[in-house]
Length: 296
Image 1 (tube, rainbow, N blue to C red):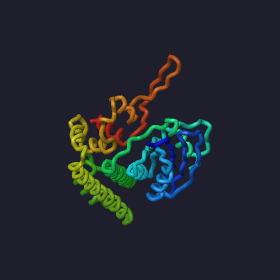
Image 2: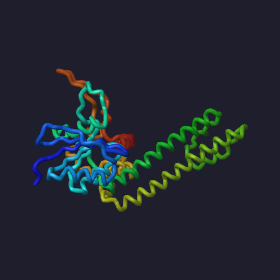
Image 3: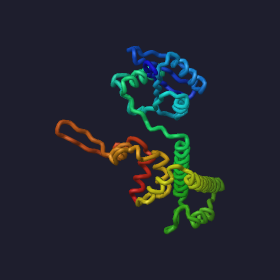
């Protein structure tokens, strides 16, 4: 049985990891050093730190490096938490930030129990989330290209005929028939049109793959259940489940709403309470699709 716990703060970067250690049996918090961000280096660190039979409790901030370190440590039998950077307690006058200080701070706060862990998706869940975000990224590019095409037409005095839907077969036939006195302008029009049609084709391909993946998805029944709600289509339901996983981890509806930033902000002082717009904290991907669904 482990005699005591070592709380280990990791400041994780693409190529390196800074390590800070706080022992449960001592007030000491020390900087251990830097190591390469590789599986071998991480597991060697854990092996060395557990030589005295101490229980290891790792922690690091959620960020662009993902959950690889978390999964490696869990597979090796160690405790590891990923924490929300926005909820780390910070001193108002602290303006110095280094990898060394961050690692030590994480170790100290973890030992004090002042860090808030985030939900870590499994590998399948993360793959579904990446697929959902890929489609979202492509849709953003599609909107941008459509805006560029519309702006080009407006600058050149070309107005879309009334009762013609942009993106419809009639619209693209109309685009194909347009002519400009300058050959270069004709090239620009064709390139914009080709770019829009190409990315639209890619989005349809992603949506087809999404439908196929849904057939094998463990949480497919939850997606189907959400689709019974008014205004919630396949994309919306898939986005919610891909981003959040099993919704039963939320105990109450207010907790779910607060997680998504869909609750009003509040400033209270004495007997005065002022409520403002929604906080917009948490997962913006889900918040966006839910707001759009509410419009329908």
